[in-house]
Length: 228
Image (cartoon, rainbow, N blue to C red; front, side, top):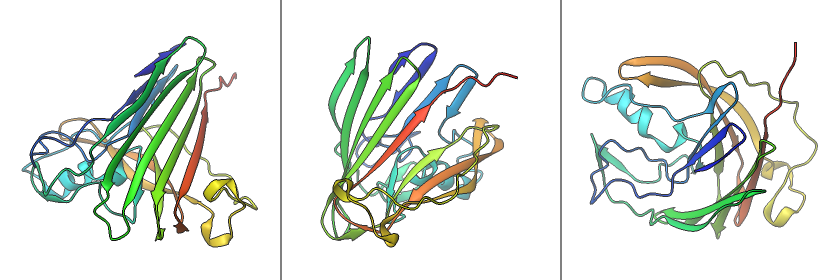
């Protein structure tokens, strides 16, 4: 966890269950949740249902419902049934955690997408400053082409306003990206279960792009007080 000045950032670098048993976990390695003065802004889906609604169960555990990176619209592991996955290949590793007074840093990686035809390693670095500013860098390491998507799952009541498309975009190594390698941000409908059996509508933001690896996303989040 990174925290300071009324802000809390919860980060997940743990395995997916144990020996194929997902248990009450989700497919959300390297995901984050964020709270700041005013409430919780980024969160996961929570728990809506188990045996009573198999469709809702799959929705609530899938990778695309969490604040992490999805590759080729695939989950980090194959869900084979209620509470079960085929195997946990994420092999998460905490690379750095420095809760310093002026700047806090956390970095971790996972290999859940190593099972793809063109294997991908996801490495995430999060920096937090007590001035209520975050920087999230998601590096996708591998070869060939892939379609990664950086997800921001907003909490119920949080409003998203998308800016008009920019003229350029970041690409591999910071180069200027051609049109098909520019992240295309979009907002979709999602939901959050604040308690069991209760569903609240929420917005899910996804910046997806078809690129040649390696590639990285950089997301900057700033909390600002709006008066009046």
